[in-house]
Image (cartoon, rainbow, N blue to C red; front, side, top):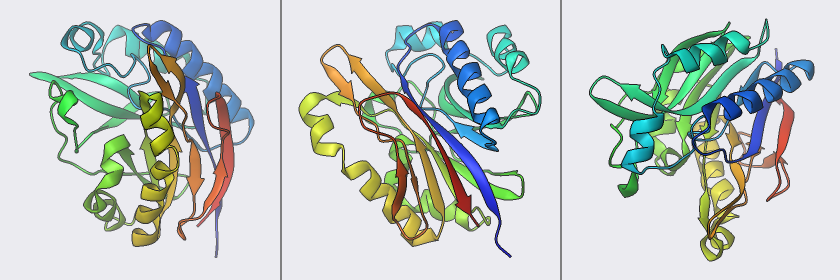
Length: 245
């Protein structure tokens, strides 16, 4: 017997160093996804504080899920909110992590920490766990951006019976690199789907920062590797789509 579950993914402008403003965006999009009947919504990599890996930014902006700022976000979520997968810079014992909080019933039930860090992310601790979560009977795992390049990450979650991969990403690049890569992100993610038989839902930023541009894409990819839904490149939006398990 098949099941249909509605999911959502945000394609947002970056907000750098203003967690309060980012929280307002999160609450607004969660409310929109709830109104649309979504059971889950995901946000881009490090969205809450902005994906900047410089030491000063990380030290100033990192938050624990027990912090006042994070608790404010949790308390402002609507009742019976969809499950939220939120990229943020996490303050952990002895350092920092590039993380995604999994939020259910106004509680951060866990954090996934990026396991395949780039050279510029040396300030972060490397994640070494691949937890799987559940919403409305759907089992899902979380990856963050570069993790999608490594088959073993997705395979580990599939071995735990995950049916969906949720990918928080930030692909802010110089213009020529962004153009070069704009079609490769989904090609790589599609490989993970075909290898594992899982769906993949991605969330990315868009807009400009200095001489860089982020085009997206924010997409839903079927187990066959087919991109079944994608937001237009280079503009914000909210993807709402159904997956069938």
